[in-house]
Length: 107
Length: 120
Image (cartoon, one colour):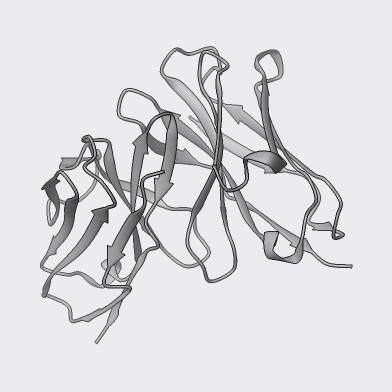
């Protein structure tokens, strides 16, 4: 099975900052890579799919990139609403997998 | 409007079998591009994918939990059922039912989740 490893596990930042979260795959993967945002007590929300495509309604300050084994989620100009936990997700060989999450909190 | 709603017991004893039902509305389980997964999240921990049923009725399971899981769907009732055998305290988690849009292979709609506690 392909393992997805996110870094960092925790990230402290301030409103207005630009932050990057990385998701590394244990082997080269296809482009079925998505990112989700989860707030406490809520279900995750899809942000980005197929590496860089923004889900409808997601602000353009969110962006995704990468290929092969390394993928990134970038938030440019953090807003108060962005402090949450972020997960990458991959699909391969009829199976799904999530990264272990990155908690973004206020510095 | 697409909705998914999980139902089932909120408390089970160790060694018991958990049966959860997901009732969907706003889309059909017959739709070619739509699959349904179960995802769980222990308190304070990460998301864990468990099982998926494809539009073709093909099933897929987490490698680590495969021996304990069964997923099935009843298209006429718009329901997807997950059973987990031999429940243990480590299986305490919020269990989410999730729609998968198979053209992008993403989880686009989530149920609210049901917290299942395993305790004697």
